[in-house]
Length: 108
Image (cartoon, rainbow, N blue to C red; front, side, top):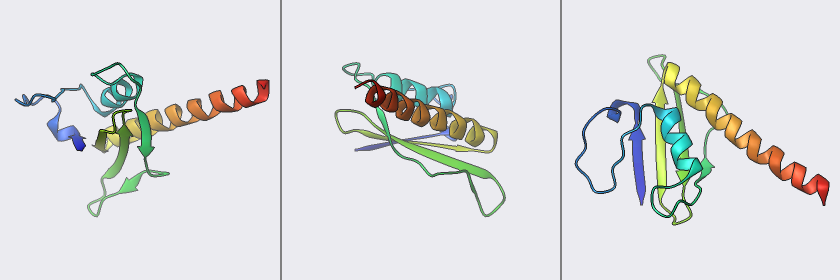
């Protein structure tokens, strides 16, 4: 199952059982990675481009796919300034998990 979260959906009232409203793409990413709503299990970034993309009309674009331990995937998309902020946050999260793993390897 893939749930898509786009910046155009923020602030809208959606009447679905598993819907969540986030302030922005970075907030959605932080919540999904820190804990999933059901079971409190951490999500993981499973797909993200290595850099920002540009749309045909010149807008910056970035996306991140987060998968929780139950296998539910969430696609977070952002444009413009939100895309830059999402890229920085996703890069920080990915670099933090890599640096934590390398610290663990160094201590063994």
